[in-house]
Image 1 (cartoon, rainbow, N blue to C red):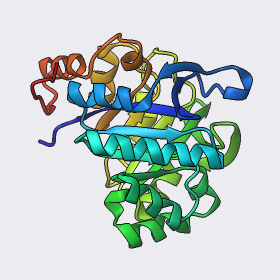
Image 2: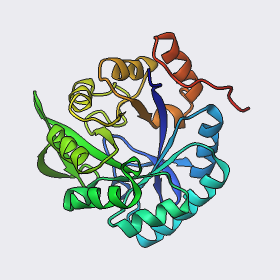
Image 3: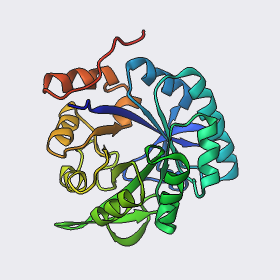
Length: 262
């Protein structure tokens, strides 16, 4: 059985890691400064993280330059795969981040604007490099809609249908972000996670809502996710990556265990 992955996520704004609740924005004062992204990445690398995700939420030329520097410095010191997303709008943007040291590229609004970007990226760099990030919000008891622009703009697209379309276009992984659960620590949305996991033939990463170790086990088992992504529980010291993996192992969930670096 394939091991399940534990992935810390860093939202980077002007070169610093921030954290919000339910997609809070910097301009609204809804973000809390957490620290230096490279220092945090090293911490999680030493704790045994399987991967690291960086999201550039600055969306400016200065932010892009800062993110390239962050990726270059992290890649030179860490030995886990790095995924980068935010503001990537072209194959050239993908190439820039891959050359800086990223292993995967995450696209969201740009893929919604131009689904052909998924196929173009997969053709140029391979499907294993292309991650589709979906921001989904429950709009009725049995329907989740895709939102763009940081969860602010409704698209009218059904989340499951969009995931399937992206998979068929060449996306090698789906990161499902629950807008409703984001930052609440109330648990992942297992139902939509399972719906998408059962509909696509690529790994699905659950994001949004981690508050307890039980939440992570629940979405891996009931939600059939291939990996769990979390931010606040790691950034504020509630759990280490090792804590999560040790607990998952006690629940019979296969994880890659290794000795943590002091």
